[in-house]
Length: 145
Figure 1 (cartoon, rainbow, N blue to C red):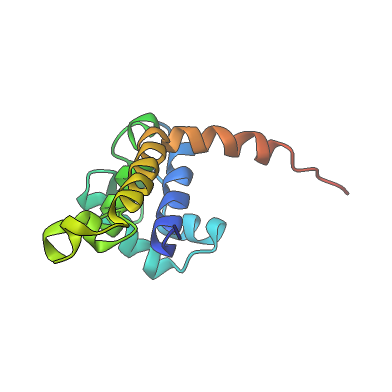
Figure 2: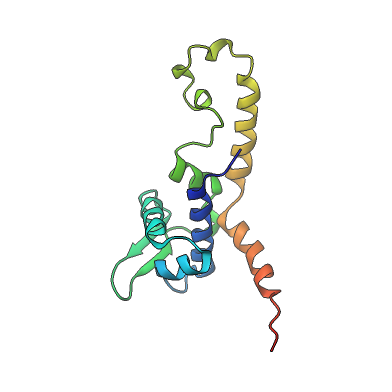
């Protein structure tokens, strides 16, 4: 399964927000610069994530974005569904009625098992889990003069 770019960017933005959770809001330009995400595209993603109750945003010179929930309450499954609508590898898994072969399809059970496994991993992995992996990596950066 290939992760869509919008999910990759969305998760990276949420990790940035999680690192500041409870301390301060972050402006779009800061996240965009640190994560190398086009700012207008990131703004669109953050708006979408806001509609799904994952991000709160405030406009203006002192505005910015914060997580709307604790990082351990936001699963990758929530992000994937919010930005993509589904994690199903095939449309017939998400919408079996749309496929006339669905009831007799010899592949369906295999793809359903794939979907179940993906849902299990995405549902049990949170933004907090990812944030905990980022912190040790960033602290290993060596500075030289």
